[in-house]
Length: 219
Image 1 (tube, rainbow, N blue to C red):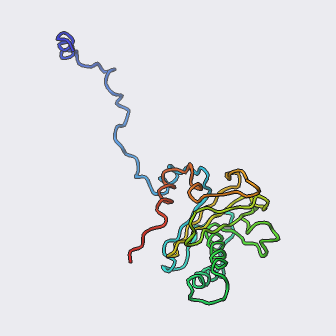
Image 2: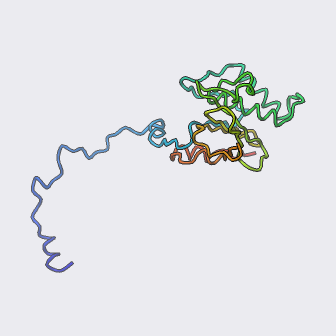
Image 3: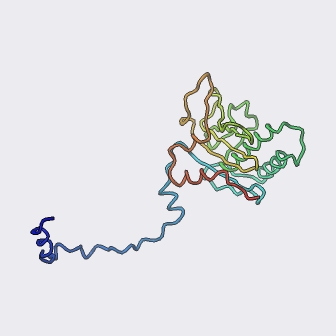
């Protein structure tokens, strides 16, 4: 800055009334604190993900699913069946069934409870595992010890939504739900879906919640 410019800046006349801030403008931050619900709504950007649910401690008490308008209601029988399947999968209740079959059923019941899916009596006849309203849902389970968090879907099956359930070695449960239109194209009638791809494009809040699964349980 030159000497003349510096001197000019020091001796400018005081601001006129029109130069002053508008006295009607409130510069105080008098807004109410943002609630958790408001924050979730502001940060929600679904991307591919349609819905999600997590259960970190299966022995902490009964599952309490979030109410979802227009979806099938959870019954006491479903909750009891889920608990029985957990005991069976842990080897505490012997049935003679293969463990992978038990874990697959466990994944279906967890998705049904959390997402309000009405499971079909005969999935083979329907070409899907259940329904949410008029939407046909296919349920896939990533079982403990699986080397890749990827499921394969047969494109000839009749479904419009996909629920993927992930069960960890210490029986933490995660479930994600997407629309079929979000899937990749089929190759030889098969569609691969990676667990991490289901949260692609999600907002900050959703990503934070999903990154926290599974949690490390202190022994």
